Length: 420
Image 1 (cartoon, rainbow, N blue to C red):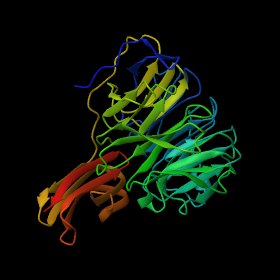
Image 2: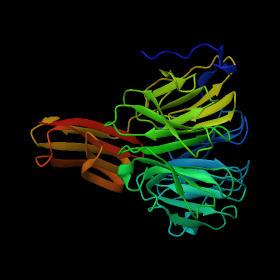
Image 3: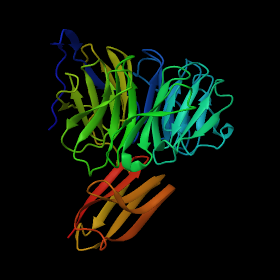
């Protein structure tokens, strides 16, 4: 059984008083995963409903949510400039814009050439400057508007990255994007620009095949954090930390076991979280030690508003407050999309992979060696659905353990097979 959150108390670490707050599950209809959440102040915010395709707004700090829009697409990212102007990116090629607080939405992706296949991350450093990046499954590109979304440019990032997932700009010209390096065997990558994306410099490579630097968080001007999405060939749970404004990064190992990582978030330099799926690790000492915490599931985005208030998106939206709270955290199992199996899992050379895709999705199905290097790509489709079967022959490969890994918009599934 996972340990419960500690009761509210104050711990003194290195002279800094750290409030141990409480997570509460908010009253929002569940989604397979709310992929993003954004607040413009303590009370007004929006949630992108992931596979549910919904945009919901709250005006009371998440106590109640109003459905504003249903896109019929997987909604990955959401960003607002003020109470009226905002953007929401889908994984089906749309980029929605609102100028009335979300009451109506218009797809501005047709204004972008070439039109992107999806927008995984958004960042608006000024009222007129907006950046978007994609795609987690490749290709890698950055889209940008300098006039409040009226016109757009698109930059091919294939020279720097295979895929991009997240973006954070601190000014119109200076910012970071994260994703998979080019070539992908170099692992996850953090890229940096000071000229609005005309030129990019790598600031970190994880060096581990199959890594993706998934989310990036700016805590303050000096302290930045990033999550490392990896695959089950890697037996650890990792995140990245910078103490010099993102110019250099170090790796923190939260656990010596595999976690499907997506979310990362810190309230201050001591209190933070990293995790994904149904596992969330928390630290109160800056990452020296970590423990599992009892907070919802299917986490993706952490959004910090102050040193005492934050939100996290998942099956529900979860709210963290430093004050005593009587709220509860829902731990019911999240709906699982898709199914993957392999038979036999212990084989001399040949086996069959069975795949069921419950909804139309981007699907990437591969067989990996124990070091994370792909040996077979069984399926890559931007609009896959239904039942699939694949016969795999590893007779030309060395004996040992292999992973069959399925990556979709809705998450990751895997099966281990052993070639005797």
